[in-house]
Length: 600
Image (cartoon, rainbow, N blue to C red):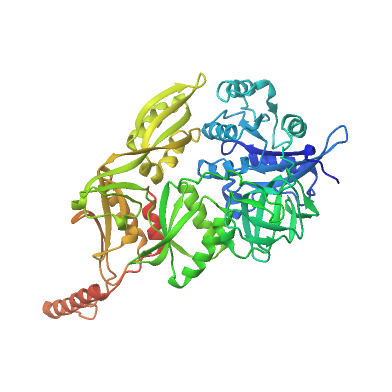
């Protein structure tokens, strides 16, 4: 069909985690008819095993849906399904840059939650047209009027515009197409004839090289055109252009306003940068598009391959993963105990877990991760200020005049009956209450100032359990504050293991040391000699556990006789064990490194 840019609509689906984005995408795809009922499955856009297992969206996914209006006009609707978890908000911000509108979903049983608001503000930054949708209206506990009130009070949108749907049963979903066509504006282009497009994502295909996901803002592109990346001036010849319709669907050409992909035999992965502008040498655009702000990593951890020979494979795997996950930041690192690896920055603990699982599953690499840490600001006695995110780089306490740690402003939205529980958890994690306000008669927003290092550890899990899953959490970095920081070291068989070291607030160090020693005792296998496990701050041991040795009964052959015969054999065994302890080395399994990161 001949397509006019006035008949294109680009929109995204945004919401808090578990409000039904992926289920709604499934219904829209089913209605558009681009996939047969036989091939249809739940969470069709969630292509990764991890997404399907955990029931969450990790990657934004694009799909182009054909739609014929009641008057016979044919439209092409480009839908981008986005993640809901706070750790993947960078995915959302990039998806929104390729759209003119967004559907914001509110769960009829849960109402507006923290990420609903955060995603709404992201959409407003991009000046998008927003259509509110109330989902899960088929549930017995659905409170539609209450959800409408929240859309008006919390989101400031007109509740009369809200569409009532049940993505699971399909009620009201057909009205969404009409609302998108009428409510979301068509793409605007400058019509200069020059080519200008924005890269908002990409992924690696082992047969075709890098596949670039892009949105065209001006001009058109077809097979055989020459393109140029503006950030590094590298040039390639286009081999294929097309749309995402579950599978890649090649097209003769793509025009301004469309969202699709191109393949140009790009084998040099570092040439493709998310946020870069693509143009053509013979039809160049005058200036690059704005791109995206750099993501701010909040959790840092070092990754080492279990087998040191896998270092090259890890380098290759991180490069390919970076294509698909632009928020991953990494640099080279090395450790006395673990050899060469990478120091990586993540947007949160879930992001760290997902990256580790993807590297192990998709690239078949076994990894060891060090304890997550954040960036601390250390002022030396000489007046020099350094940012330190790795415990091994922490200086001697005699050289330090003061240390500062990052704090966050946390916004927690909960039903008011959980207020006491939330207060208790936040104070446990060294939080300070700033203020609270009622959003509706029984829901409140509580604001706290919390140290980021505490949030990284296991704050989110605790919050979810004390609020029975109803607490929603969002945060912004709020700068640095003075802290009393110590380095907690772990000694196994009297040898310091630098990969287990942690930087931690003095008040929490002893308790964390005790918990970690107990965990390590369970994970490290027994040897022929006793293994002491110690936690130390400087020269002071604050916790100790001992793994008892296997013991062979050397006196079994002595029946009766003089006691000195038995004593002689036991002394001989004791000397042997002592010598073994001096020369024996302790293998630390990977599970032991991970056990230190988790608390009970």
